[in-house]
Length: 477
Image (cartoon, rainbow, N blue to C red; front, side):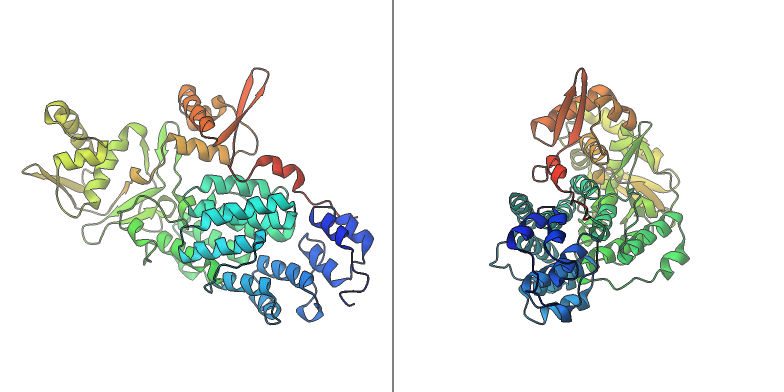
């Protein structure tokens, strides 16, 4: 059937893209190519083949569906007839360098954001936020789904996986099935404790890597065969494989792996969130220290795979002890007492005031690595010499309590009280209340009062929860 026969009216398309799918079915047959392509994005039908498509609207829907299906071949076929949207989606999915477009629709700006992330350009977050605001102003749901997932990815890459988790947990409640592959893939990388399984084979491969690493199953880890990995996702999946297996590096990983930069690359930021239980911090990042090999950061979830034992819990009062050890391990040579004190405490060393405190800290540090390393002190120059393979928590990569509270809020579907947060994290209610007040002041969360009950919810300055009341498509009859 040709694109012009029994085609829906423009006002019908307007209603459909704002969520009223029934209006579309009342105005045109399901077999119409444009209708079928649109409904494919809602999970009702499959899109028409590229050979059946004669108009740009149908190609636009079909190319978006192909992107969500990681179908580079179909995108190539749609791009071959000169469709600009299909060409740009194919380029960004395949990892082909892409120049910003002059078209300023929200999806085009979101594609620019994806390309900027892939190319390491600093404006990717600004572009992603702009795209979400444009889509929200338009009110077209498919555009809001696409731009919101891109914003979640940008938040993760910017070092805020808790905000990515917040967006993706909200989207998974309302977006139709064709969007779940990408949503769950991003959700797992932002929050590896997420329990949902992704329809993407690519996502299942990533999860299998992590499961094998957690189990310490070297054979399974080595035998996992990756599926076809589109260029858009190749670097982050390869980086995760390198970090889990403690093998190889990349330019984006090297500063973090070597211990010089505490900020994890966006590809693994979600795996570096610590957990607090019973007053102890489970460090997600460890230092692999060996007498014969360079020091390297590893993920706690992969300790068994790389020869360690998962006993990384340490109390909050030990944080400075392990910070001191981490600074000694990462130093290129001996450190003076003044320099080491400054690195650990963040302020200058005054012998008359701090020598006793520093002696106690050195004693605790030596006890922590007894039988595994020695702390040498020659002419007040300190150096760590490993005598056996050991794994040390790296508090420099550990979030403070404010960051942990933010992550807990992100993993909560509804509002939650300060007392409930404190009980879950095994910290005082007063500490949590102080942090929540600071978060309220900067707009990072919002407060709801029901009588005497006060509860809190994480908020994103761009992706607002009220949006969800209109993000669900009306089911077709």
